[in-house]
Image (cartoon, rainbow, N blue to C red):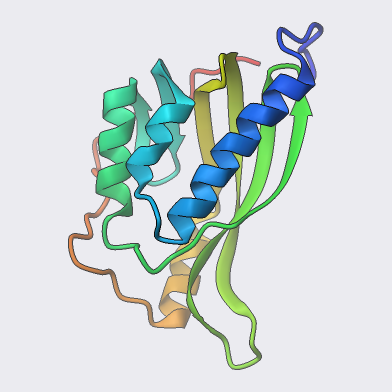
Amino acid sequence: MAGSAQARFQQEELAQAYEAYKKTRERIDAGELWWDALRDHFTSDATFVDPAWGRVDGLDAIVQFLEDSMRGLEDWTFPLEWIAFEGDCLITGWQNRLPGHRPDGSYYQVPGMSRIRYAGDGKFSFEQDLINMVHMLEVMKESGWKPGAGFSNPPRDRVRLCAWEP
């Protein structure tokens, strides 16, 4: 994120937008909201890049992607753990947490990170989620987790390129 010589937005504004996003994510994890609630946090022309589902452009397509990709994962949570800001960019750290615990009491989880660009007015124009998919598949197998009703595998023909230049 070096290279953002000038911040277009005050860090306080970016932090407030992230806090609103984080509260929505926490309510999703608590089962109070569904993933389409993230609609309010993205611009109409936003891009979302997922490690399994690929690149999705436009708000309506992002909402459909969230609906399709999260169905069957209702017993997972994605706790947000930390954030770093620079200019109009932020990076968050979070977990892909499966249900249950290992015999030692630890969670079945895999860390993830997101690169996010703030566009102003409390909305983000870009998110790219990054996780080690091999590790994710290993932990899914270790936990014995099985997908819930409505689960869909990611499409094989998605573009996986990232178009964000910081």
